[in-house]
Image 1 (cartoon, rainbow, N blue to C red):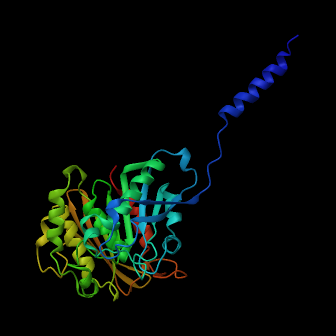
Image 2 (image 1 turned 45 degrees about the vertical axis):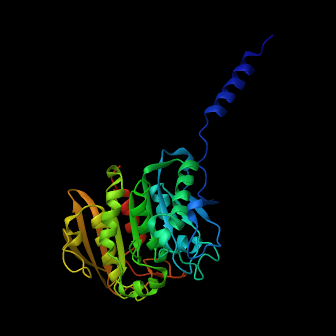
Image 3 (image 1 turned 60 degrees about the horizontal axis):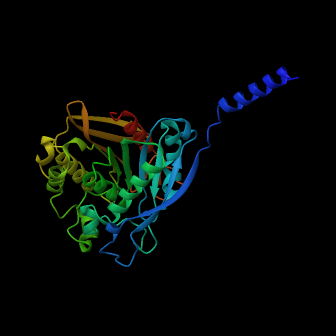
Length: 336
């Protein structure tokens, strides 16, 4: 005789297991690597065109819809682990539910561990620009990424590479966040790189932005910029952030791109001054209608360091404003 009670109990247990909600996966870092034949460097032709990377996956990503992606590129004498810890980017990623891609510069590609933003091919979209672009595409395919919400951020030489990605690959990049970085194509040759960092571009970076706009699919624009700059930065002085703003104004067809002296910010559409931990913070904005085109944040008293970062790690300043918080707000407020 069939044991109906036992059969029913087993059936209930089976369906309970089948439909039981799985616990969310823990947050974690995963490793990877990607290269492209377009990634060879004129300044280091013996280095294979491949770079490793870390990916931070927030808790419960598998149970969520498509997520934004932040690409965070370290500076000279840093590692992905350094910039992740110093900026506390994992906390922001958990809060936003986004992933973070952290490219790693290869030993031998640059003696100081910098990204080669001054390499001619890289500035045109090849070289290390092509390598990081290939990493973005791989991560988009491996994880559920919202392709309309990929934001590239960087510090110092990483900021210079982020600036190039925004100009050369607007099909991949929804916005750029550059802390203490340089404009795309700022140096006419690798030999001019140090002079350019100290004194500003020896090329017409606004024209470079206009040319990039002419080459882009109009549907991929605008690519808004946030440029964070310390007033006391002697490694990458404030002139570089001014030129970044002018370049992105040209990329996004803002009429202020060529107005006024090239060594000064053009007249903003809005300007505000606040005080954070005793530091004056001046924020200037340019917009096309309701959409942000560029934002320049000048922090009085800040040197060459990530604002609001963890000082246990190199190139971080614990005083505010919190640059990572500004990055998170940028991602959160971007239009879908």
